[in-house]
Image 1 (cartoon, helix red, strand yellow):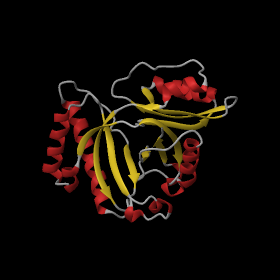
Image 2 (tube, one colour):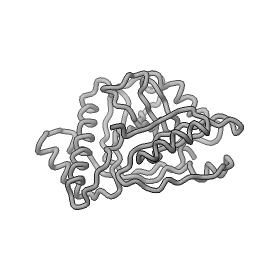
Image 3 (spheres, helix red, strand yellow):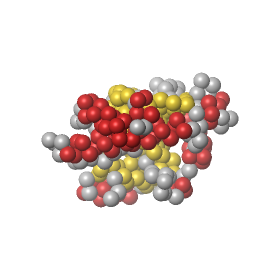
Image 4 (cartoon, helix red, strand yellow):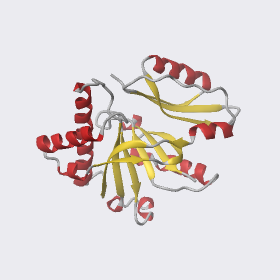
Length: 250
């Protein structure tokens, strides 16, 4: 069963039809971007199945300024996080970190489902913050010098002690070394710009450049490069991988 619905570059009529169809099946917005011109706007959206279906909020036509006031603040979320450095394609540390994040997230999900509330929910996508002490390492593609924080959002209704119990269970059953490095932290980015990239990670360069140009023409970039991985890269065709690329801005 699909837990994510996404589309890119749709007209308003196309967007509304896709949104309404997904909403009937219990999907709610994870992100929404409007681009193009005011005369011919295009819509890029990601919707996800929520554990508890909330009311679908809608807005009448907004001016650019009004739209920015509504949408440009990313709220605070609770994340399970782990830090590291090195090439994500070859680093054992990276592979262990991702395995630990998903193992604890799924054990947490099953504990909540079997608990008193009996709530079921979809485990959220893997996300990553990326940076380097010398940012030229990104231009030169020197992945060995990359630093990262990998993370998975946890529902606000999941208590800290449940996640700690899940971590202990994973340590007992799987003995994953990276579990000891996990932490639970509230994370807030504030005002951001983002774009949906479709295709392999190696082709992200032009998309990132467009995002940077968008921000730099209006204000300044702050914080860290942020990616949200919407596709299962073990199964999906790399040409169809969907990644939200986000960057905080003043």
